[in-house]
Image (cartoon, rainbow over all chains, first blue to last red; front, top):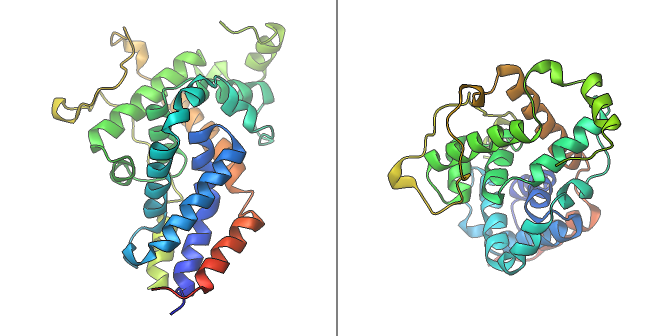
Length: 183
Length: 88
């Protein structure tokens, strides 16, 4: 019996956000694509354990994260050390955002502890509920909330955001004049 | 059935950032994780609404950069090939 096309389409529909999540974990596009491929192989080999009607994205994200944790842990220090490498993996930027500001944001995000970055991405970018994010990470909902809060506070610190006036052209200009010298 | 799955997918496109709240981590949920060495609870540590919104916006912009690249052909091929195989 072949796979239900509806299920297959749900898997395909999740691939773009799986990649985005994988890149945030790996800090490297090539490695992220390997991880996504491995996730898809694993998922389709065990598709029977997916309960139709339940949350396909959460199921696939869980598999991807577990694979990353088990098989990529050896290289973890390398990833953690990759200060700014996550920022470097993504060179394009949305037009509505100032380039300097955007690069600063990526660099700051790369400096977060992996647990906090992961939680922030799942809730703030992937759009998972706190409950789903907790299930994906295998931890308590309170832990996810705490990590997300810390991530946001730390990001604001790193970006030295004091007020909304700090965003925009003035900030970008100052950053350029400062020559990107960040301490 | 497929429709329910689709609803699920749609539901997860929005974001769920709640306002910052005091540390929600309960003792029993605690796991050994690196706490920032010394971050006393300063009033200014509470982020303004605009700042939170801005961080969320940046985060989604960056993430969606990748999402908008769609499904790379080799991954689409992989899924289709595996889907067409007989399942046990």
